[in-house]
Image 1 (tube, helix red, strand yellow):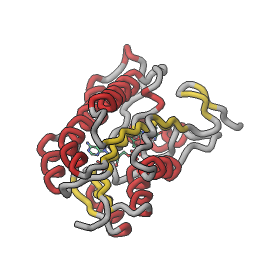
Image 2 (cartoon, helix red, strand yellow; image 1 turned 60 degrees about the horizontal axis):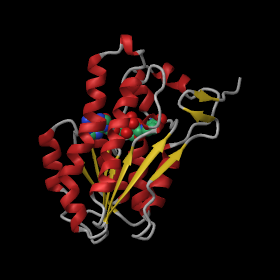
Image 3 (cartoon, protein in one colour; image 1 turned 180 degrees about the vertical axis):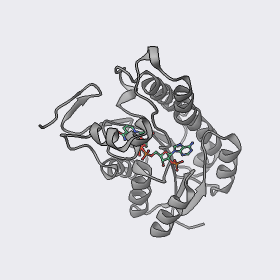
Image 4 (spheres, helix red, strand yellow; image 1 turned 30 degrees about the horizontal axis):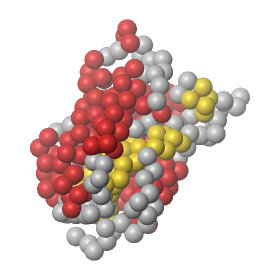
Length: 245
Ligand code: NAP
């Protein structure tokens, strides 16, 4: 595929994943981009001289086909595919939204990690980066489905840190606060409501997060950045942000 080291990015068709694919390509990686909207991945792959592959992390056979098409040696895996659906109190939560969130964020990460671990090992210097969220740090009102899924995804990732100790595989968890991507559109299903989420403040951009991921993956092999929390200056936590006007 290439003599550059391989970086795999899931959910690379938009937002943080797309920006991460570009940042890792700029850092010298051959990037393999996976998502359901593979046409979008193809456009980015063409731009960065990478490879686009279809990937639905909720579908075991799609993950198996994706893993089989990835080269035998993988230096970096970015578990980025994920998101939220709904913003309701527990009493009114939609079970289908919860199923979607746990399937994509938690089981999706499990499937991809299980599939690619042998190839990360084979590189002799693997690195698993998982994009969880500040939702993996504490609960917030109307967010139990997402905070629950992100906590579970974080536990999978943090558990691996211990289980892989002694192996040449680093683990970095990225915990962003508010980032303006398609995230809120997917969550709320309405562009006006999505725009309101970022009203009166300057959110992080996908490139801000990608920059941090590229930094973490380009440190010397003995340096493991375990957890990186990044938020807009105007956001203290998931429940508190300062808005102008
Ligand atoms: P986004 O623009 O909506 O991107 C989400 C990505 O996940 C898309 O590329 C989407 O691709 C992919 N995805 C969704 N379902 C998938 C599936 N079944 N199989 C494969 N890929 C799938 O949102 P984003 O903000 O960049 O989100 C990226 C990650 O950051 C998520 O894990 C999210 O939870 C996390 N995060 C976001 C924020 C924020 O404020 N934006 C904050 C903290 C953490 P396809 O639809 O093409 O499959």
